[in-house]
Image (cartoon, rainbow, N blue to C red; front, side, top):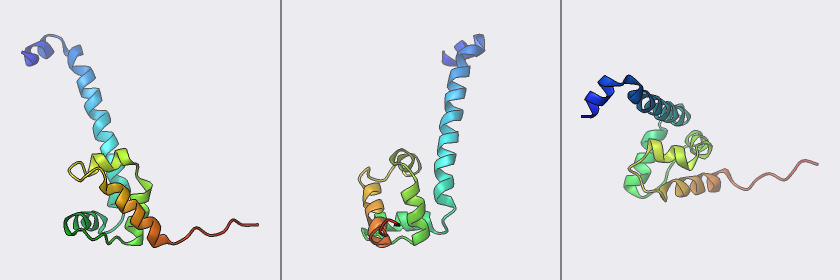
Length: 102
């Protein structure tokens, strides 16, 4: 039925196509942040499945740079509480913030 409606009126299909393109564009942007950090995706999976977080500084920079919304898009099957754990690990690894410049 839906196919018939779209065939009869192509304008009905246009919003679905545009929405799908927006979703794909968003996911590509999210992946771009993580894919550039060598081994980061593997580190995230390994951390999740072993229960021991071990990320490189390059991966931490990528993880810290993505929003929770992006994290959910590129790792939808990981627990929603896992991203804050990764970010917390990265903050702890980077050490205390430097004092403000005078």
